[in-house]
Every structure is written in structure tokens, then in C-alpha cells.
Length: 169
Length: 169
DNA sequence: GGAAGTCAGTTGTAGGTGCAACCATTTTGG
DNA sequence: CCAAAATGGTTGCACCTACAACTGACTTCC
Image (cartoon, rainbow over all chains, first blue to last red; front, side):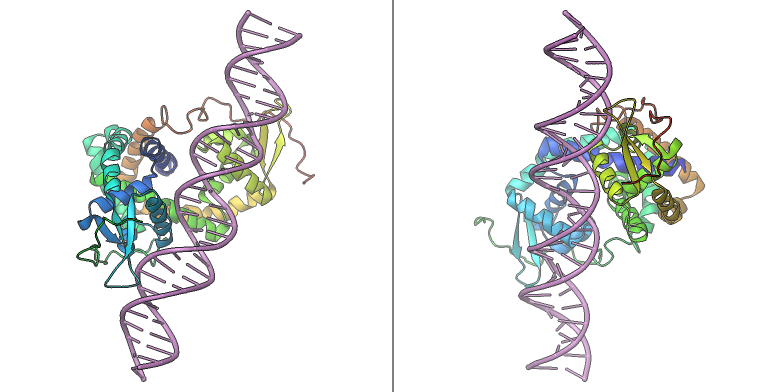
């Protein structure tokens, strides 16, 4: 009982702290940051929308809206996949990559300050085990995003040679 | 690192699970449920808006919007505080109380299934300690709701004898 | 090889949330 | 006392998210 009440409180407060730090320092949502950050680690800084959605635990509509916004901001660009005309590839722009690099330290510091540094090394290990156990319950038959969350997709984009980033818009 | 990645994932997935269970079973948001539930435990099932906001870790504007919606649904009612003309009291209606009673078991089962039952008794204790430690960092100077989060307010509403619930709308 | 089904993604809409601005009331301080 | 500051709440606006409906492209399977 005490465990749940406190966990629920963390669930209520932590996202707000992360969002407001990122928003004021970089003008980004936590989720937007995750999207950019995930893209920055992908080969060619490019991914298929579905793969990105699965990785970020987002529904496809949600990702689509966010991608639209990030594209308006010039941080990502989307282009059709030549191999599968249904698919869309999303790629981090140079500006977007710079944005990730600029905002990563502040974000990491916030996480460290509010979570990691509050715990002993032993507790960090315990937290890893606990969250792993909970995620086992959340993942497989978690009521959310049932049909979208497919972890068996290839992460790599289908295009080997994406169109030159030179021409924009 | 592993701890944070997993915790972030829980932060992303758990609220969705809670919301969708409550929404489909009771037509309520998790936060709406918390508001109703908190009110149901208050003396007279009545609280001042500010006190309720502090208890639920919400900003006053957010609570005001939610209260408006819950009032439209007939689950709560608001009335001016006779002692301080600025203040507003919010009270759970009979219908609202019934709603809490009806939806509590399902919600509790969801929490148990997805969190508590996934852990050993020892881990539940560890989780309590960990969340307590994190909350110490989040509460005092947590960037969110700085001016609203006042825990030193009296929880009791100012009216000793609220107007009879008999007359509605 | 063509109809039926599935898949990738987008769009529209309704509701939730933060922030800033606002109004009314109370408190404070000269 | 009265003006200035602080308090309690509400409202408007912009953005985010879920859900449902839709389009267009691929697959299956006779």
C-alpha cells in the first residue's frame, strides 16, 4: 500500500519535472527528446516510423503527430521508403542532431539529480530488478498499444542510400 | 543507466494502463479517480480546492478544469466558502461516492496485478524505500507547482455545516 | 490475376494539461 | 483607513494524446 501510494506520486511528479526542465532548456517535450535521441543512435540517423514507434512505446498516431511537429521545427525530415511505398522513413536533420547534443547534458543531469543520486548503489540495482519485473507484466499483454508494439521488427530503415539531405522542404 | 531506461519505460507505460482500465470500466481518468477517491475520505466528503490540489499534487488550474468536468458529470458539486469569499469548497455527491465504490475494486486489482504481484515482499519494501528517497528530491524544490504545493494547509474545509445537499442545480 | 484482407501511416476530433492572464477578496503596512 | 501586495480560483489558449476512421499500398489465396 505505502509502496503504491509513493510510486503513484512519483508517476505524477517525475514526468512534470522532466518535461519542464527540457521545455525551458531546449523547448522540447520529454517524449520529443526521446524521439530525437533514439533517432540519433540509429544507423543513418534514420528509422521507419513503425520501428521508431515500437522503440519509444508510442502509438503510431501519436508518433505521427509528434513527427509532424518536429518536422515543422526542422529537426527531422520524412521521406517515402523506396522498397515499400506504404512505409515512411524519418531522419534526424543536422539541426536535430545538434539539438540532441546540446540538450543531452542538462537532461542527464536532471535524471541523475532527481533519481540516481537519491539512491545508493544497492538501491539502483534493486530498482533495475523491480522495474524489470514490472515491465514483464506491462509488455506482453499490456492493454495499451497492443497491436502497435511489435518488437520483432527490424530496426534498420529499408533504404540503403537515403536521398541527399541537401534538398529540404 | 539500465535502471533509468527501465524506469522511464514504466513511466511511459503504466499511466496508460491505469487510464485505459479506469476509462473503459468507469469512464474516468486515473487523475479523476484520485480526486474522487481523495474526496471520499475527507470529512463531510468536502475539501477546499487548494487543499485538494495540494493532496493530489495538481496545479490549481488543472484541478479547476477537472472539477468543472466532474461537476458536469454530477459527481461533485462546488459552493462558495462562507468564511472566505475567495475560497471554493468541493464536495463529492452521492452519485460520485457510489462511483468510487464501484470502481475501486477494479482499479485496485489492476494495480496489484501490474505492480505488487510482480514483486516479492522484499522488493515491495525496497520499492517503498526507493520511492521515498526519490520523493524527497521531488517535493521540496521540485520545479513543478512550486507555489501551489503547500503541505501545511489544513485539510478540513472551512465550513462546519455545508448547505444541504438536497437542492441541486 | 483479381478480390479480400492486412499493413503503414495520416487525419479529425474530443478531452487532458501547463502557462499566463485575469478577477475578486483578503491581508498588510503606512 | 486606504493603497499595495498577496491569495484563491477561474478562464483562454496552445499543445499533447488517445481513439476512430480513412487512404493507399502490399499479400494471400483461390
